[in-house]
Length: 390
Ligand SMILES: [Zn+2]
Image 1 (cartoon, rainbow, N blue to C red):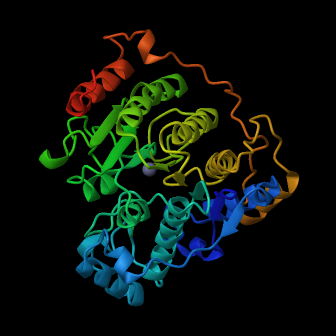
Image 2 (spheres, helix red, strand yellow):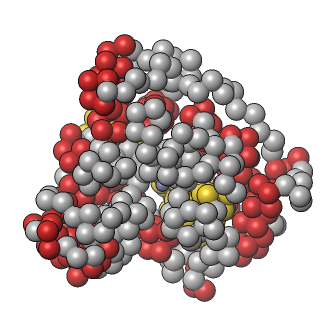
């Protein structure tokens, strides 16, 4: 019997800190955790701290020489010279880097284990979703790929079909790479077009290795895509491939950097559309994966205005107590925001764009529209390989 949803949380994950000049400020995690508490959601979930991922778990995805390099950089950050992506501008080395990265990975692996064993139907690790880390290199603010490790652990436990859906503004390249040759894992990524954004991959033509054709699906959205287009693209691709694949578990990555206020990318999505897609992921888990859902965080660099609200909505949805968009944010949380950041926090759990309206793909598309062209390219490249009509 499945208990309540699990929220994976260990205060020590806020030690994932590349320093004061780096955009991935861990205050976003602390503020999310306290907003979850301020809205009373932590009484609706089981808050669990899993153990850090050990060596044998990390090796499910990462090369041994890379793990050794992370440990060395962690013990002596000054010596990291850019090898293995460590000691770079994106991924500066810091003391304790191995330990905290393994702790975050452990939360996602623990979430996967809980869902697989039926201890919880849904589990959330908003500190996770570090989808750019490669088997042998750090990349894009990511050291260990907790998302890929969660999927790999599910396979190790006996899962035969795991679906990974990534709606971060950046391509989920590390997860795609980890399972490029594995037909047991379907990876679907919706992201800003690689021509305009890091990591410059995620073209529709990336559909998996020959032995796993059609196991990768990429929707490359034009810069500037807003709510209606983003939600339309999600629904034009994701439900159909999940219905076909019939995953035993759905793992989703909810990077909040699609938001119009995000400083590192160029989509124009609101909090309200992010919430709508979170709700859709939850429904899809129930429809096609027996309800088994592991939900992760990801990118998100509007650390006060956007990230805490977005992932608090995610926790509410997983908890079965979705937060109404019009909800007023408790003053105590806003005081904490000011004390920690000298910024004024948002006042409501909405950007005022609720409800989000969008047109369904089945009702037709416009060949001259750039968003529709992006959806068509994704469908045309991947759907026939899965035996689906493009
Ligand atoms: Zn991102």
